[in-house]
Length: 168
Image (cartoon, rainbow, N blue to C red; front, side, top):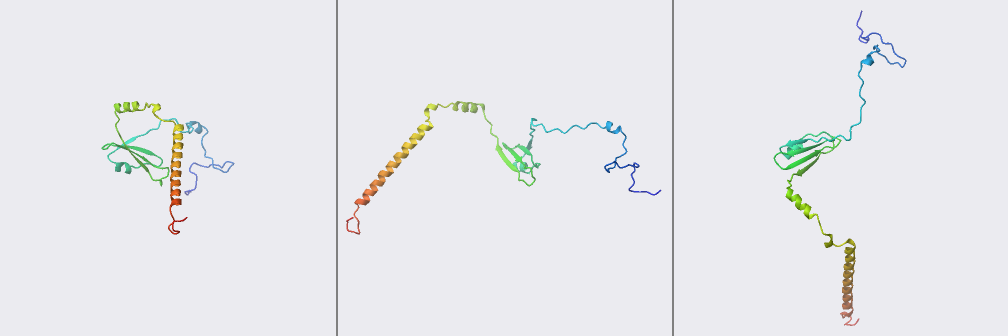
């Protein structure tokens, strides 16, 4: 008997009515397959896991590889800076690199800020009062310009004409 490379090693498999070949599988085989869990939607309420990568310099943070569509936060060990590197969804998008300075805040500073937030509003003018003042000052400026123009016109009328020998 000669070797046929196109022969089915499992024996004869008759085609079904659709023309597809059905394998000769025992009926209880499908009962032995564990059920596959249905794919579920991602949990929107899941906490966002942010990791912080410790680096020695800003250049090290800039050269750190970031996958497209991801964001990585870096903490500089030697300087008081933190960095954020965000890649766009496309590998062709340029990375967005941001630098943040860390500043320590004392409790006494935060207490002084709370004290300065209480402002006495009686010392300030209302908008309506400011707009009335602005209208009054505009009117005063216009009156001054009118008076100046009147003086100039009067001076020009009373100035003797040099070509006509002093007659108008």
